[in-house]
Amino acid sequence: MTIIGWILLGLIAGAIAKAILPGRQAGGWIATLILGVVGALVGGFIGGRVFGVGIEDFFSIETWLVAIAGSVLVLFIYGLVTRGSRR
Image 1 (cartoon, helix red, strand yellow):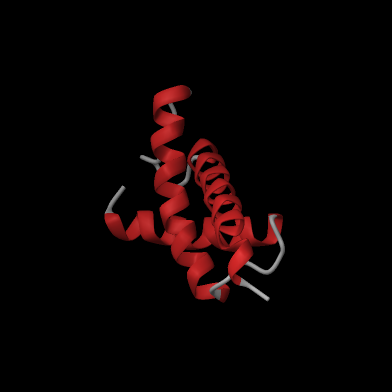
Image 2: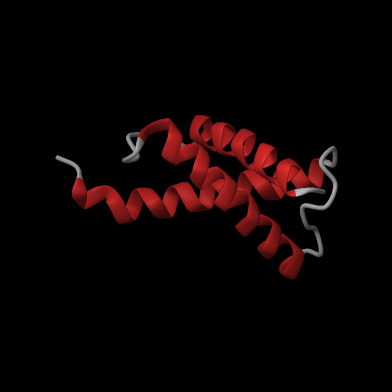
């Protein structure tokens, strides 16, 4: 998969992760989508190391599951880190 495919997958996975993990993460939708791209890459890395599943094929269900799981993980950690900065 090309870098454009990874970015597109991460943007969509970030939007899905935001729907799964609602709340007031700092930064709004733009930060959420950027964190989705990072989360998709993290999910692909962890999925490749632990389960042998990466983000090589755009139309594979395993690719989408690890990308969404990684995005949820990154959004959750980001929410914990930025929780004290909001009022």
